[in-house]
Length: 335
Image 1 (cartoon, rainbow, N blue to C red):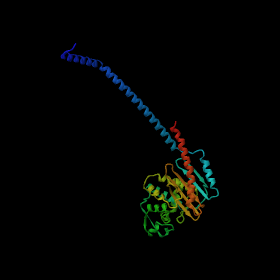
Image 2 (tube, rainbow, N blue to C red):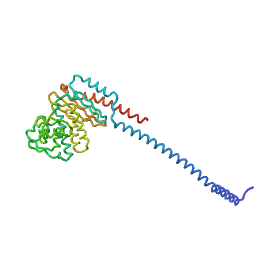
Image 3 (cartoon, rainbow, N blue to C red):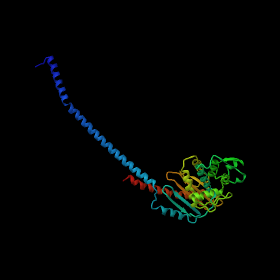
Image 4 (cartoon, rainbow, N blue to C red):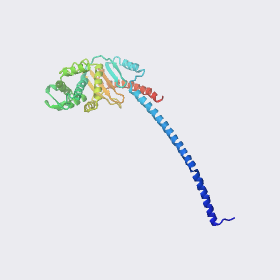
C-alpha cells in the first residue's frame, strides 16, 4: 500500500522524534562513556609521566653520584708501582722531580731533597709576594719602581728598551720576568722591595726559608720539594679570578724554553737555567690540573728534549689513573 506524500512526511517526523528521544535518554550514558575513556587516558598519561620522571630522577641521581665520585681523590692500585718503576728507570740520570695531581691529592718525588741551582724559577716567590700584597691593598701594582744602573743584568731583553731612572709599572716588570725571565726587571723589584722582606714574608707565612740577598736573589740549594711548594702556593694565588691572575697566566703561557710542550697540551711554566743546571716548573690548568717540576744537569744541550720526555712519561701514568677513575666512577651509573 502506498502512502500519501503527507503520510510519508509525518512518518519521517515520527522516526526523527523517536531517534531524538533515544539520544536524549542515553546522552548521560554516552557522556559517561566518553568521560570514562578520558579518565582512563588521563590516568595512563599521569602514570607515564610519573614513570618518566622517576627514570629522569634516577638518571640524575646516578649522574650526581658519578660527579661526586669524580670530585674525590682517587689512586688506582698500581699507581705507586708505576711511578716507582718510572723513577727507577731514571737511575743514573741527574734528575729531581715533583709531580702533584691536584684533584686526586697525590704527590710523587724523585730525589726530593737533592740540591740544584735554582736559576730563574725562584722569581715565582717575588710574584706571589706582590700579588698577595696587592690583594690586601698594601701595594698598587700599577704604581712604579725606578730602574737604576745597578739593576742592569744580562738576559734582559725587555728592560734593555728602557732608560735608566725610568719609572716602570710593576705589572710590566712582573710580565717581563715571568715570560722571558728578564733579569733586570727582577733586580729592580728585589732592590725596591728588599730581599730580607721577601725572606721574612715566606718564613712567617709559609715556613719557607729563602736565602735571598739583594745581590743574589736566587737559591743554591734548590730542590724539587721547594719547587713543588712554590707551585702549590702559586696555584692557589692564581685561583682568584682577577686582573693580577690574568697578568701572570698570560706571561707564563709562553714557548720560551718551555720543556713541557706536548701535542695538544698547553702549560704555564717558569724555566731557570745557569751553567749546567736546567730547570722547568709548570702548571697544567686542564679539567684535572697538575703541578710538575723537573730539575736536571742531564740536558746535554737538549734541555727541551729531556724535560718534555720526562713530562710525557709522567703524563701517561697520570692519564692512566684518570681513565681508571672514570671507569670506577661509571659504576655508579650502572647501579
